Structure formats: C-alpha cells, structure tokens
Image 1: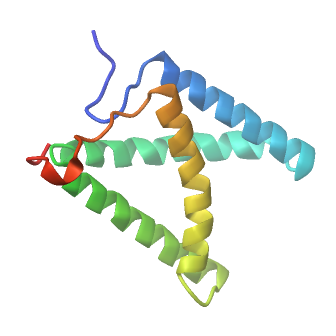
Image 2: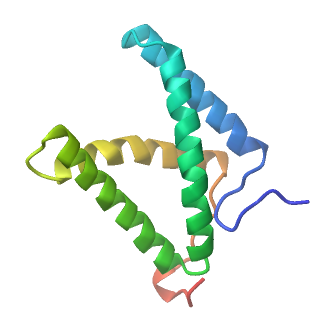
Image 3: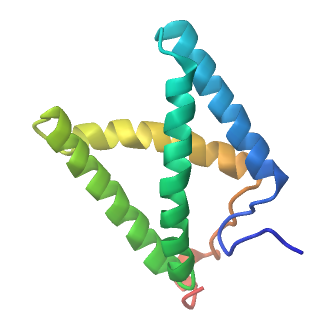
Length: 129
C-alpha cells in the first residue's frame, strides 16, 4: 500500500528528513540561542498539526497545479502580512524575505530527499494537471 499523497512522498525519506531537520534546529537553538530544545520540539509538533490541516486543503486543490500555486502564494502573503502586523514592520516584504529564507532551504531539502513530486513540465503547457 502506497503512503504517497498526490503532491508529497510521505514514506520513510520524509520522516527521516523531518527528524534530521528538527534535531538540527533543536541543537542549534540550545547551543547558540540558549533556548531549551523542548521549545523547538513543541513548535515542530504544533507546526505538524497545522500542516496536516493545510495538507488536507492542498490535497483538494492538487488536481490543478495553478490552484495549488495560487493557494501557496496566498498562504505566503497572509503569513507576511500577519508577521508585519505582529512585529510592527513598515513594509510586508521585509518579513516576507525572512519567511522565504526559512521556506526555500526546506523546500530544497525536500526536493533533495525526493519528498516532493515535480510539476508537469513545461508548466505553462500543462492541461490542469
């Protein structure tokens, strides 16, 4: 029985990658930021619960790459605007750059581990897949 969704390979490479990234973050926080590692672990568990809800929404949108990309862009803009309000930044793009700086390396690791399916290529000629 396959454990794959339509967008994400959810087999053992995904879980290995998640454990490695979580462990690195916890060690970094404890060693260099002097934060308890349990704060990172709690944040990861909370993020997993949130991502489960988001994944369920995306799975319904995954019939079309365009809808998926638009949804992800909407999530990014909402996150940037929310962060702008919380930290009192003058421009939304400043927190947006920080968010992208955190997201893009993780996407790179996920692609490197083979956890994500690639979009149809060339994407501009896809017929809604």
